[in-house]
Amino acid sequence: MDTDDLSEESYDAVIRKAEKFHHDLTLQFGLLASDCKDESEYLKQALLFIKECESNIEEAIDEIFYENIPEINKFKSALKEIKKIIKKVQKIPIEKRTYEEW
Image 1 (tube, rainbow, N blue to C red):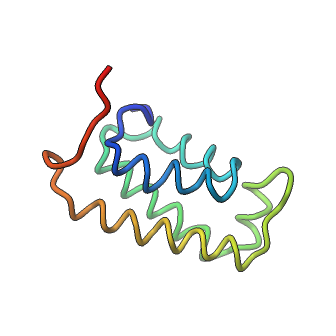
Image 2 (tube, one colour; image 1 turned 180 degrees about the vertical axis):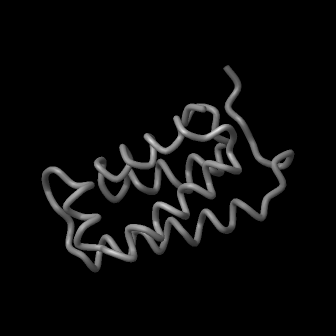
């Protein structure tokens, strides 16, 4: 799938929230979409990615950020916030989520 296939709620929760923090983080969340078959799987993978980052924050920073490397505490806070919003989105039934019309 592509990030364009995400509902507005999921796109806001992950992609826009990550972009607000740092473009390099957005790229990582964007790459996740290509390995997922649907939005539910994407959100699960995003949470898994966050968990991996949190388990070794210094290594995650080294692997994700190329320039303007964020402070560890700010990165932790951004991950925590994205995780919280993803969990809220997961509670919204798929049929109640909004999708952009093409």
